[in-house]
Image (tube, rainbow over all chains, first blue to last red):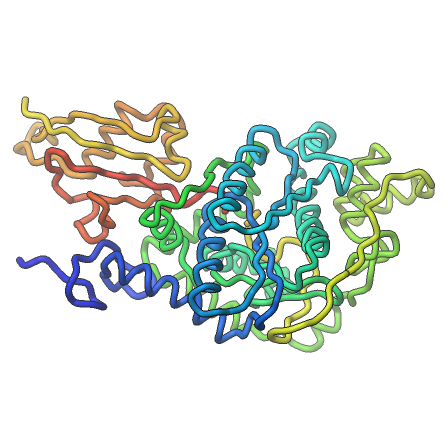
Length: 364
Length: 108
């Protein structure tokens, strides 16, 4: 039997079977279609305008490492005219984040992009190591997720950027659709498939890899020899997401289009008006100025719980009541610096409202 | 017994299950007997996966093998080609082959 040839160029030997289409393609066609599809996603969604300042949320993991490479490549190739930055959050997890930040510093040198690192200890006065010592390993992911989301926005405001791009891929989005269905979280289900989201006065966020399969991201990194950091967080992953992920990977093994099909299902859901009316309106946090659906934003509530030695009080509504019942907030309490946008200009598509936290995917 | 030499690589976090070592050189039987009633057949990747589990894996077998093959989410390359193009587990190994296992399951 003669060897099969690449389904696109019909000349070279294929090296990859595309999960999205089943096509067998060669290495150079793979690079080209991978990059071109992301470019098409960016242009069809009109994510950017020339002159935009864009921060790449960089964790040192596979998705953000490939995203930094792709953003740099496409910006040069298609003259997007973007000012690109790397933005990393240091959660303060010894032996995990300190190692992965080394990978980000490597990216900074390779791509010659300015890098800003903002730490939890700088912003909140607590590292994740401190928080875990206080709350244990059960709810620590809640703290980390809420704190990271706000830290990214604040880091972006410090850089003066109008847009954050994250490495969330198609698998992450499909996983989040499943989780929101299983939890009955209608509000998040409605917006977790949006490619670009924005709160009242926070910075836009988008996911250029929304339709990009994890398999292809990993293969791209492998064939391009991009080095990334791949250790699981030492504070154990979000168990619920882990189940959704395993389920999704089993589905993908049986039918690779499952991932893109679930995203399309998520996009097609329509929320009835009476359900929408039941949802809380967005306001700004009275203490720190960040967007919130209550008087206090989740990060301020969690921080107050930590500071007052009732660490788990910020997690549930019941806990918040206990915190309030324990007396008024002390005057000398550590708080998060007031949030102010110092960016000007606005561009791109009209984003959907996106209250935090963790609308799609793990750390990114 | 005839053996074949292979180069094995683990990446994407899988190396943590294999003594935190990315690259391994191994020799395996080229025609292992499968069951007493069957004639020996050429070693394939399914055989290799079980050989790795028995001989090289140090911890958490459930993160490597599931239902007799690699766990979903682990990519396999045969001489830098997606194993899905090479017959997956039934690819018959040849002396000098390079097999790469990459986990996609670790943090983004």
